[in-house]
Structure formats: structure tokens, C-alpha cells
Length: 451
Image: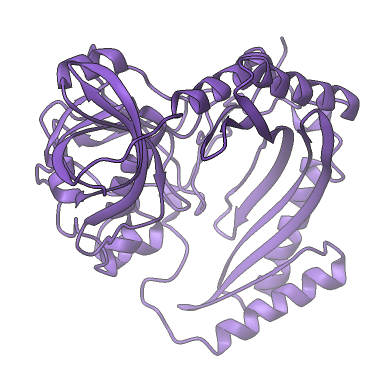
């Protein structure tokens, strides 16, 4: 199949139009006193269809556009934005940014990146696969997905609905050092959430598929089927007495632990000293089997890009190797605050990959023997200054390497420093639906608080 470009889409503005708009912003800003300028121009649209109990619940269309302008007067910075692309609005937006800059205190870390660090060549990362699905077909897909759940068992007693969403966008980023690039991308998903049980014993669960290319989706009935089976498996949940025990985070939740690690190693948290991993460069914080790599140029992946939000070229690198911190996630600004060089992470990390063992999830359960498998987390109880971790949870109690019974209304607690150090193994059941690819994570011990 030939690769598609933004020209194949129903965008209101062509890439060339966005480029011309970006250049006009740069020219106008410099003409009126900016010593440097950067601009981002974007447009996106899509549709989301939801059904519940086979009836159409919502049909939503979205179409938006945006212009963001950052100007520098020396080392004074000003930013303004607009959703109006008219010439008058563009001039007003630049004027607003310049006005803010004139009244802002100087910041010796403000400014554009070094020109030599900017991305030089466009890169085709195969990110654009429009899914121009008609509304009636999207409705039918959502109905089939939900029906796949309802058909599993009469105990699937209710539904929170199934959703089919198709989104596409494109943008141009540019700055006064001569950088100008951008690309089109798509993101589509199908999801289903159902309720199983009757009376006082009712449980919900969900599942989804997400991809840049809708042709990669499994049969939608399978998504609904799996959502239903997850909900059914949680019926007759029990409470646990308070204890300390091994804990396995199921792969979709393990990604949140990698998210905690990523945040703690990010420049903003480090220079503000709001991270428990301040000054961790070169230190071993995880077991020797743990490697965290960043791969920004994987074709078709969700966090693939040739450049970051500053226009700095991205590159492959290992963040953690053999458990030792090899690098941080730094933007141009945060790197200057730390006296370091940007790592091309303005805007976040790009396609994180975590090493794994030979075991799938059943294999990890067998190796663990006795402990807790966590399949749902609730709340946001993470203190990044101290590393203290406490969240509501649900899952399954494991005995003799097998799931014994479901559990809910529990809290798991620990400290991320200890949790990272006490990783026992990572499964090969890698969840690839997001930007952090990691299997289930087995921790040696956490406190589980129950009744």
C-alpha cells in the first residue's frame, strides 16, 4: 500500500499553507522587535461514535486549529496563541507575545536551541493512515464490538458502551534559526466497557485497541469479548487482610510505573528538585537486568518523531542500562537550568522500550508462587519528592502460582526507590498500545492494606 500524505486528507489547510503561515509569523515577529521566534501551526479533525446497549449514544465531530507563538527579546520570553488564522489575528497574536516579553523578567536559560542541534532532514515515519469511515459503518463497528461482549455470558448484565474514534492532524513547527518541519499523523481506537454480575456483586472492566492504522485492529468482537471476560473474572471479589507480599503489575499498569520513572528523570522535575531521583546520573537504581531505551524513529509508533518541540533532532539512546541511569529527559530550557545539553525531549519521551525476561504473565505468576496480581489502579497517590507511593487497587490473589480469587477494595503502598530496586522480573507480555512498551512487572514486596 502506498504511503499517504496530508494531500490525501480533508484538511482545510495544506502543508504549504501552514508553512507560509509559519513564515509570516517569523517575519512579522522579527520586523517588530523580536530577536528570536518560534511558532507552531496545527490543524486536526475527527469523529467519535459511541453506542450503549446497541443504541447510538453520541456522534461527535471535532475540528480545530491552533497557532502558538513564542518570541524572545534578548532573554525575555513571551508566548501567545490563537485559533484564528486571519492576517489580522496573526498580527495581534505576535503583538501580544511581544508585549508579554517586554514585561517579563530576563531568564538566562531562555532562548532557542543551538542551531547545530536542530533537525536537518525530513523523515518519513509512516504516521499518517486516514480512516475515513462513514458514520453508519462506525456505528455498526461499535455495535459489533459491544455485542461481542454481551454474547459472552448472561452475567454481562449491562454496558457502559463501545466507542469507535478516528482522528487525524498535521502541523508545522518553525523558528528563526531556519528550522521548519512538520508532518501529518493519525490516531484511531476502538474500546468497550461492560458490567458483569447482579445485585451486590457487580464488576466493570474494559479493553481497547489503538493504532495509527485502523487496518491493524483485531476483529472488534474480540475487543468486546475480552472486556467481558475481564469483568466476569472479577465477580465474587474478596477483601484481603493487611500484609506485605510480592506484587505483579499487569502490563497495562506496568506502563504507569515506567511513567513514574520517566517523570522523576525529567528535566523539569530535576531542576525544580521535585524528584526523588535528583543527582541520580551514573547511579544504579534498578536491577542489572533492567534496560530502558528510547527509540524515536520506529515507523508507525505513537511517539515517533524526527524532532522534539524545540526542533532538536531526536536520536536513539539508552536511558537506563544494566540498572544504571545513563541520561535524563531534557528540553533546551531544562538542560540549561541543569548545566547540561538537551536530549531532544522537549514535549516528552519518544517510544520507550523496557527489557524483559523469557516469562509471559502465567510464567511470572508461577515463579512468584504467592502474592498479588494488580489489574486496576485508582487515585494518584504518588509523591515525586519523596517517592512515596500509595494507590487504590484491585486484582487477583495468587496461590501456588495460579490465580486463586479476585480481590478489590485494597490499597498498595511502598516507595518508588525501593520498588524500582526490588524488581524481580519483567514479563514478555508487552503491551504495545501506547508509547511505553513494557511487560508485567514483578516487585519483591509491597504493603497491601485491606480490611
